[in-house]
Length: 235
Image (cartoon, rainbow, N blue to C red; front, side):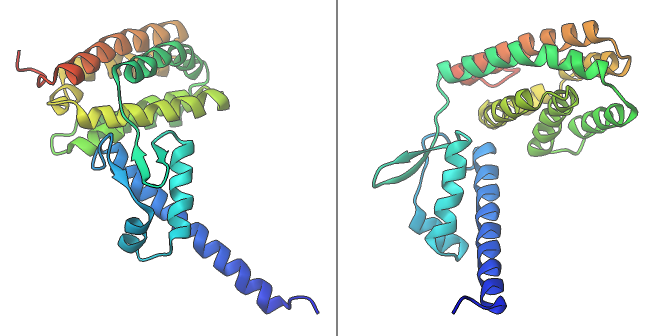
């Protein structure tokens, strides 16, 4: 005899519950990695995480496998998973790819601009530069500003690539000494305003130039400060 409806329903419920656990654990671990609470080179073990989250090892393993696909952790055979490092080469590759991809995508966003996008960009800027915002809020708002324009390009493949690059940028923001001073600075505000104004005006050429100039300045600052370890503004 085959399984009855009740049996199939229970099986479906178990599968959905495990998927929910997997997604919850993945999201929490991703958040910790992006905020550098789990720093580059840190090692996590399935057994320890299962105990921490009060679940079996299966959803933990599935969550870590998803993070491996995202490039945030790598497998250490018989040892666990290591949070991926951020070498000079890693950072240069991320920055070079952003310079290659984002300017034409921002130009496309300007061509596709609508009222919702303009409101979203202004909202991200308001949160990034709010007086009482903490670093995590500022970083989320700054990266959200960029991703809003990238998504408005309507280039799905490019969006997927930039979203992955943005994960690395988020980590870098939380690792650079004194980055909060930079991310709320007048220079950063002026750069985002220039981009936002160009996109809102539907000026593709100006939007492309504005984001390229912004990335050149921001990338140089981030790389320099991350690898010298000198707090921003201390020179």
